[in-house]
Length: 358
Image 1 (cartoon, one colour):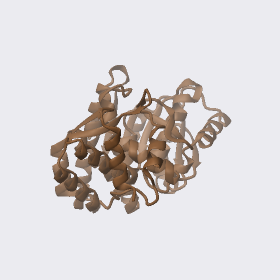
Image 2: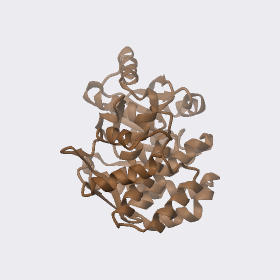
Image 3: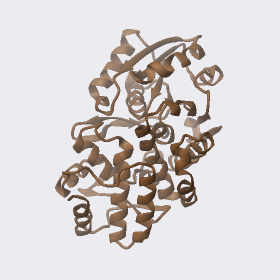
Image 4: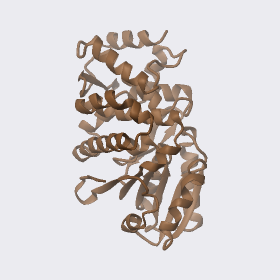
């Protein structure tokens, strides 16, 4: 299955299916020069690196294996990739292959954007979250201790290869984390998909191949459409951040990696819905319906104990959607209809935060 991200001269395909890691025909089509640098981590490398190498036999392949975890998505790790590239040395035609989950895709993507002012990037996501979200759209970044993804660049890959067979090795917690981003697509603009998820969430947790393929395809089509319309997040693309402003506050407060990204986003979506209820945009029954779906997916629906409204507000103030000192939030007019706005009463936001922080 192939989905195209339409960006005129920088358009690229997303390949979705099983047994793709060893497809030399796909790799030959998208590796741009004789040199390849595979960036992966200590968990993924033993599982999938050797599976991919035969398909790259005609290239001069090098690898750099990073430690696993969100806490390593920082400038020090980014510099270690530059060290590996320079020691070879790799030239401007070197293709960087990001083999792993969202952390690998983000940091390797940022390295590709920066090294010699930009080298080709091939995203090969191995987690559900990365396959449906972070590998598509060209957002690359590392974290700062004061804020998540605050140092980065928009840099589109030349292709995305989402091998669904890799999901069989995912720990259950990682699978559930990815489902948060899948549910997000239904909430922001695809009510029909949200209803489908309510019927099939059990099949997804059981790794039913047909259900997974449909969920990944539908998610990627939704994201590809939004990215094509608004590549650099000047408007509609910001809707993809439903729950993220609240969620990033949780991740920053707890220390990167303590909560998985999808877990924090799940709570953030509930908090955004709560504020939407207080503003009279959606019904309490709508929120209850989505909370039930998130619980069925095994995701948290409340922030960690000990977080105060002040803590949330402090972290939310360091957010890419802050404009003129005002935090813009993604809220809901209805299930399947999201909007971005700073037109909410501060008192309503404070009441909403207080309701979760006790």
